[in-house]
Amino acid sequence: MDEQKGIQEPKKRSKRPLDKDITQQTLPALKPVLEPIWVVLIFLAIGTVLVPIGGVCIYYGYKAVEVSARYDDSCLQQYSTNMDRQAYLWQNGANDTALSCNIMVNVTQDMVAPIYVYYELNGFYQNHRRYVKSRSDAQLAGGHTLDGACSPEDNLGGNSSLPINPCGLIAWSFFNDSYTVSAARCLVPRPAGWRTFAV
Image (cartoon, rainbow, N blue to C red; front, side, top):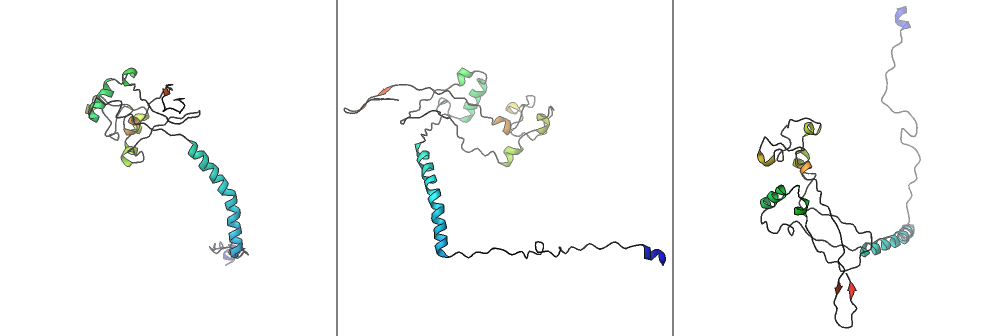
């Protein structure tokens, strides 16, 4: 009996939160009920700050000059199908002069430096499941074995003796088009009474 009295039983832990205001969520809170006049005044104050900022953003947004020109179909006009275009690109992959293309773009407004050139892709979904999975981590780590995850771009022309390195749609969709922009200065004739201007 004496031995049992000397041993203390461990206290049972309760999941009940402490009896404090913050744990019992009984802190006093500010619950304002605004009258309509205060709501109107607050919205007017916010509007007087944000409307001028929005006006400045719209003004500078309309000042930007944007010109677009599609060049994927104009540079290889002599080839009617995508297979013919792909064969031409494969054949001249190392010949930069054969793959260069000149496009004339008419700009009707003055463009202030700096001028940025971007390219736009349509019908390209880089978050598609097949696109994301089309890669070989073993190959990227330095291995030579393909685990079949690179389909459909794992072998060159379907020939298993010609593996593509790096393989997969991710590696094959690296767009490396480069641009050189030059201004052709010419005078555009206008009717009598109009001044000619340089383009």
